[in-house]
Length: 86
Image 1 (tube, helix red, strand yellow):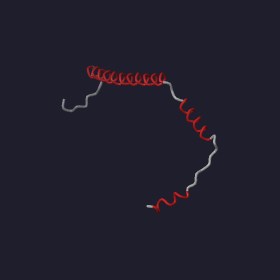
Image 2 (image 1 turned 45 degrees about the horizontal axis):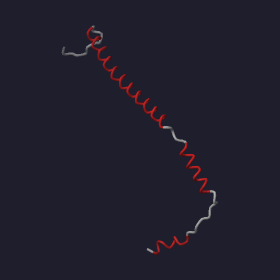
Image 3 (image 1 turned 180 degrees about the vertical axis):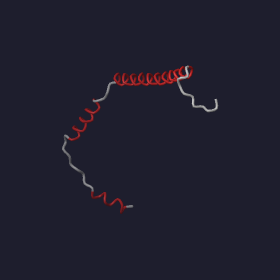
Image 4 (image 1 turned 30 degrees about the horizontal axis):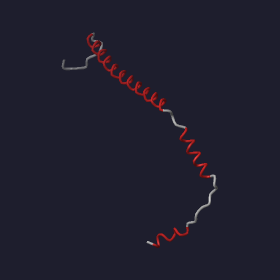
């Protein structure tokens, strides 16, 4: 085990500029300040929910109107019937 740990003895401490740590902290603070407000996030989520509900309503309503249109067209014999055994 000591043979595996021997290369770690050659590692030397690196000297960095004293202001580097404060620069890193400042960048972290700047990144944390660029967040979206809760009010904006809720309004975006609400608009997506309304858009989703409207989409579902249109799809369901379109299906029922298509079926009604086919029934009316069949009543007036506007849709050709290809059934041979009628």
